[in-house]
Amino acid sequence: MTNRMTFRAGLLMAVAVVAGACSPGGGTTPSTAGASAASIAPTGKSIKDCAITLIPKSTDNPYFTGVQFGANEAAKALGGKPVDFVGSPQSDVPGQIQRVQAATVSKVCAVAIASLDPAALAPALKAAKDAGIAVVGYDADTQADARTVFINQVDTTALGVAMAQDLAKQMNNTGNFAILSAQSTAANQNAWIAAGLEELKKPEYAKMTLVKTVYGDDDYKKSYDQAVSLMQAYPDLAGILAPEPAGLEGATKARDDLSFNPELAIAGLGWPPADKELLKNGKSTGFYLWSPNDLGYMTYYAIAALVEGKITGKEGETFDAGRLGTATVEANNFITVGPPVFYTKDNVDELLGGFKTE
Image (cartoon, rainbow, N blue to C red):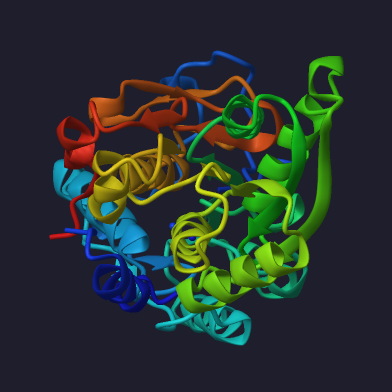
């Protein structure tokens, strides 16, 4: 999802309205699908004694601060220690690698990471696994063989299809559109985009044409500049799909600053605490997201289940996830938090409780 605080401030000043996605198990005692926790050999560890390293894409992004809040909420419920939230203020692949290596040397119980570059991170994550550390991906997946489970914030296909359908609806299924994504290596955005483009292959969308895909690197200023370039290069542009909040915000601001077609469709992900004003003043008809607090909460509960031997990461295993109910390990060792949520002017205020940061 980088310095979100910085670009939020930019959006506040500029628009004057504001108050931005996606394997062999690592256990040694696999269980059969549906096996109870009691039938799985315990590891001898207790979550109460565990140090857990939580690595975000960037520490200045309030989305990831929200994930940290949810993880610590779960830690308190389980009697565990607060997570060690470490990273760089902005997206930094070498920095993520260094944090994984430091956690390995420190012999923490678990590392949870939102991967910026799955291939680059794989060697360090595999070394952590080899050292007996539980490696969990969240928000943006790692290479499958470099982690035990991935905590998927939302069903990948469902979100990709939903964003594509919203864009198509706004465009009346006709016209040229572009994609303004985050990093080109971001596994979550790439998976959502792939699912959305697969949906748009259907006959009813035959009059829609993708003209270009660009990347704003989760940065508001760069996303804004990319949106300006798109509008200048394609004066007949009818839509922009932005599967992360910086892109949606930047595209909205660029549309206004350039006095571009006011009917330009902009669909994708938003950041409700700031972007609610875009909904209320009609600059956005709606956008998707999920609760970062729930993502962090599920991540911690999954880590607890792994380190205590209640699950191994095998498909079909289940574990208690506190207030989120019973969670299930799905195919590819995914654990999905819930369905995508569509935020509108009518529901955004009541749903802000899932975005706490302190």
